[in-house]
Image (cartoon, rainbow, N blue to C red; front, side, top):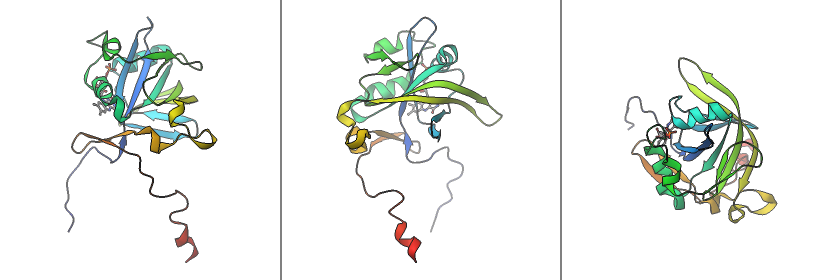
Length: 190
Ligand SMILES: Cc1cc2nc3c(=O)[nH]c(=O)nc-3n(C[C@H](O)[C@H](O)[C@H](O)COP(=O)(O)O)c2cc1C
């Protein structure tokens, strides 16, 4: 038997990423986002409210980073989703996180976090159904401890957080159970 559960604004898993951008005065703001997705070979879409301080920063500086959150950074990642720079100008400083300016875009990389996707603002999309910020990915940088063979990021080392919007849980992922474009290949031969 299946149960009908009604409308639920959730997929599982959802990513936990921290969007970071400088304001016009150079102050960093960062926010937690789970509604984020790769949408082309060099593009990422963020479904973030226009009113967030981080969104306002992105519109000012036209650049941002998407930092993958992991278990070691769960406390600051959640803080970035609770506090707002609109009311707490020292939000980023209070987190205690370190940052350096990207060599590729005018946006801060959170160096405590293992992976940063460095983006230029490509487009803001506003329709009756969505508000999206689309970034053009110009570089990805990662702590060398999570980079494996052929300079590919090794997900078993990232210990990435994923978000469960059914129960507001954070989970950590890392077990590889198969290979994509391969696990189903046997059925092609039937
Ligand atoms: C787990 C989690 C996921 C979130 N995902 C999103 C999201 O995808 N889009 C969004 O607009 N806000 C999201 N938020 C809310 C923002 O992070 C939050 O409103 C934050 O205070 C905005 O910060 P800012 O105003 O300093 O930019 C999320 C919060 C949490 C805790």
